[in-house]
Image 1: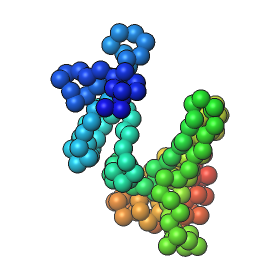
Image 2: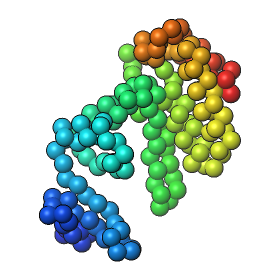
Image 3: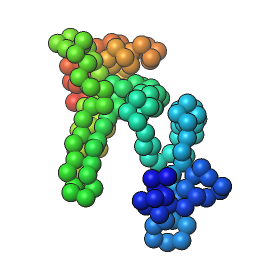
Image 4: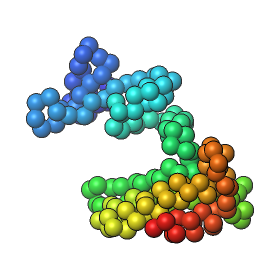
Length: 172
């Protein structure tokens, strides 16, 4: 209703979907209203059908954690908040601070490392970004990984967070 009232959205395919027209005929932003549990199932089985998901915080947490699990968990999921109007951006780990793991040299630094990779790529420093990906890929392929990956990988050796960081650097 908000899309219709404020942005001129038009229903299509009999609803409940609508399109906000933009530019060329047939182009625009498609809004699909969906129930959270159905969306969670669809995003896991048909991720290519989704570009952007706008939802409330709790449902967003469920979705992002489930999707992160598909690539190894929240320990490796990067985050970026970009204002494309001003160009300002903040890149950060998606998992929060995890205070229960403070000073244990245990957790996977991949989320922060990949957030840095995203930042370098956003800034146009593609060589630095590519080097980070090379290092991280090599470290994971070596099977010398933090506890979260070690429990998922056959034949892996569990190492500390700081050792994993050194492993990434060795593979750059």
